[in-house]
Amino acid sequence: MKLIARAIPVIIAAVGVGAMYVWLSGSVAEHFEPRLPGRDGRPTAGHPTDANQPEEPTKIAGRLLKSDGIPADLPGAWPRFRGADLDAISKEDVKLARTWPEQGPDVLWSIPVGEGYAGAAVLAGRVYIVDYDQEKDADAIRCLSLADGKEIWRYSYPIKIKRWHGMSRGVPAVTDKHLVAMGPKCHVTCVDSMTGEFRWMFNLVKEFKTIIPEWYTAQSPLIDDGKAIIAPAGDVLMIAVDCESGRILWKTPNPDGWVMTHSSIVPMDFNGKRFYVYCAGDQVKGAVVGVSAEDGTVLWQYDQWKVRFNVPTPVVVAPDRILLTAGYSQTEKGCTMLRFTENDGKIAVESEFLHSTDVFGSIQQTPIFYNGYIYGVRPDEQLVCLDQGGNVVWTSSSANKFGFGPYTIADGLMYVMNSSGRLTLVRPDASGYVQLAQADVIDGHETWGPMAVVSGRLIVRDLRRMMCLDVSQH
Image (cartoon, rainbow, N blue to C red; front, top):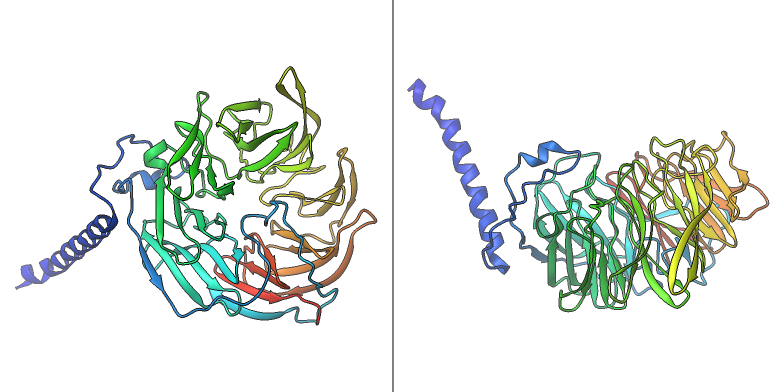
């Protein structure tokens, strides 16, 4: 009897594992024909425990779950990372409050989210986030009502993710027809932005030999002229995918073996040429490249920008200038301004200045170029105003520190969040640091997710909660 009693837990465990296998196998077969997983055998960079997990299939079938949320009847949009113009500046003609009561702006809604730092995209009264369902072990693309935060639908697919300093990070790109999102382990998924119906998926690790960056990917996809622009940085550097069909239109070779970073792609137009700028690689074999929007060829590259972690996205400062920033364990490279020139049809790149992090740099967030000046939070946690020549105009001083939280600008106001949920309202101009209001709006920590501003509402989050604040002028 003792032998039988000891065997019972083992039998139960075996049955449980078998049931999970059957569930996952059935899910994979739901939408796709069986296909052998890739056999590249490359471990996830910086996360060796993942290499010991069973290989996942190349394609992972998902499920669409519809709920009773209703889209808000509100104007405005923040349709991708850093907003419509990728500059973290709202262009809406909506008057916002210049001061707040002691408790801060009113909370319109608040919802729990899976651990992470993924910010929101907003379109047509809907809020879109890339979430992780820790209870069901699934990536979840969620569509919520801007009015009350209630879920309208979610498209999820099973993927095992271990806590690795949070999980989800990227912001989806949304149009009136398509949503393209990248999950923490580099699954790029396109669904119908209004209904959530599945369109296509790429598993970058299996299909392009992408190495997942340390702490999972933070790359936010770009939709440009009906194409999803993605940087696998594996056996190809960049791809353009037709959003409607999922067909790859062009691929950029990657002969130098540059790897994926946390930085996202930004488009730029110079002398009639449109290209996509991406910070690829690391401090050993990194570079910044400009890839032709027409056919994916590399128009220029700058290999002097090699940093330990490329996290901030390049900032377009002028038709011929772009700012790069960094901050992780770097003293010699905090920022540089690149200038483009063209001779005989070829684009040349040179650095106009290079500063260490104690002058200017950024660890996580992407600086903002506004009214001729650059604003960002330095690694010493001070808010800094920099001119285009690289000169520090002012700092918020050591008395006003902001950790590594996000910031954005709307209606001539700058919203700056610190790492523990304190929101500060600042006047962004060259006259000096002027604080207009301040309040603790989230009782949490690691409030690092990018903000979104739409129709007088400010969407913020910490590690486990997302909130919508009323910042309108009443």
